[in-house]
Length: 288
Ligand SMILES: Cc1cc2nc3c(=O)[nH]c(=O)nc-3n(C[C@H](O)[C@H](O)[C@H](O)COP(=O)(O)OP(=O)(O)OC[C@H]3O[C@@H](n4cnc5c(N)ncnc54)[C@H](O)[C@@H]3O)c2cc1C
Image (cartoon, rainbow, N blue to C red; front, side, top):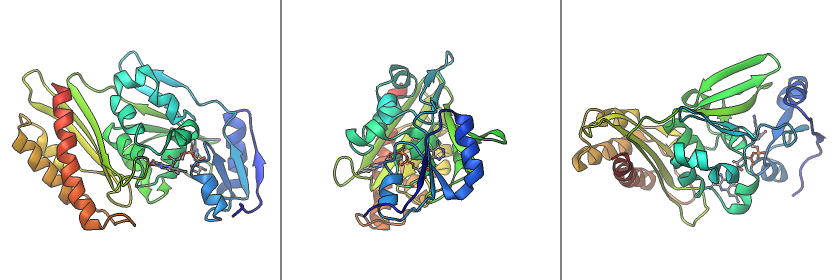
């Protein structure tokens, strides 16, 4: 199939891109890496009248803060984040999870901003953003606002972005000392969307007691799904095997998978418990 006819604009600045989006509203789509938008247009699932190409506006910077935080421009390609030494040092779960996203060819073009704006609940990065407590910077010609990842994903392929807004950057706060992270997923073939994926973040105090935990899953519901009850149950424990088993069982109960061509909801729920237990074990060891 070929896409429906559309006008293409390639602005040189964010301001120009935002002016075009304000002018055309829902009729316009930003074009980032094109790895979701272009196939959707070719299938005519998406028929924007106007494309506002972001490939000349900048927004590719990945900045490691002196405090261990990381700020990633929306147009940073997956491959740039995957190979960024600062990102690997401060938030190693990014590198771990990005290796599971699609194939190298897609990671050469796909951007973090495009991926999060697409808001596929089967996608790895939205779940990782929840687990890392990311804050998303949204900009329009009207101004700028920040939204927590937890408030950004509002439904399948649906975000809190208004018709005239772009996702400009993603801010990841520093992880506390003695924090371990892990991403694990199960897919039919390497590079396929996961049947279930789990991000685990565990922080311990000097005595080994858990002082913070965050767990989030992909392919686990209509949006990336956090498991706050499971995470809260870990806090204050010494993270024994039994504590992790109980948390994994809580994750299994908290997710709300809807099934896919590859896995029934019951199988996805089973996978959530199994992978959560393994991811928590990895995060616990890495937090030591
Ligand atoms: C064969 C194949 C396999 C794949 N496998 C996986 C996988 O395993 N896991 C996975 O997570 N993904 C997978 N993907 C999707 C891939 O990750 C996409 O690159 C990503 O979802 C979209 O990023 P993009 O930069 O290409 O965005 P685009 O396709 O250009 O845009 C996606 C959407 O976001 C909007 N948009 C883009 N940038 C912005 C912005 N800055 N502000 C506001 N809106 C914006 C666009 O208008 C569009 O609606 C796969 C894709 C293919 C083709």
